Length: 166
Image 1 (cartoon, one colour):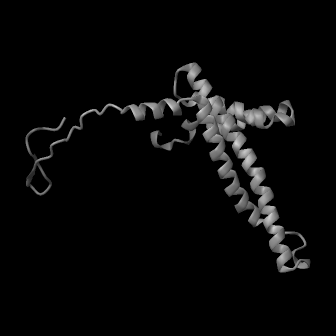
Image 2 (image 1 turned 90 degrees about the vertical axis):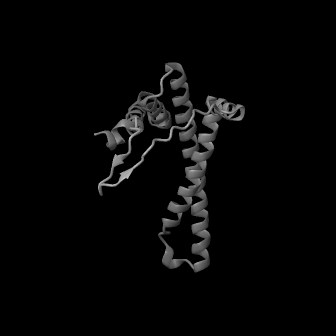
Image 3 (image 1 turned 120 degrees about the horizontal axis):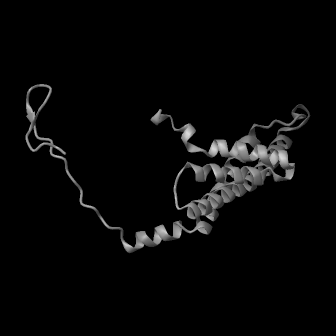
């Protein structure tokens, strides 16, 4: 707590530094409804899927623009522009699907695990990452599923990236 007496500053002058304590404000009914809606796993998953799709579109546009056609010397400027636009569109759609599914699965898994465990910690993120990585790599067989699980779990575990505590 702050002392009620004035403290001496570095230059010898006394300065009053009273800590201002804000009263606790209860949430409004609208804020409570908003929190209840956001705590719904279906809503959280759909929003994450939509935002993942948007990120995928942007990444597809960016990386699609970086690809050069092999036969660029043989194409006219108009053909190159049309080719680049089609390539960017294909990459955008592909990346949007991938990131939307990734966001949806991760968010749904994390929310369900969090509600089942009744805890909010890094274990939820790691398990959700494992579920997501395994689901996305399932077409590649059991070995790919295990590698996807371990890879996503590693990158989802927040503690290893938080350098502020170490």
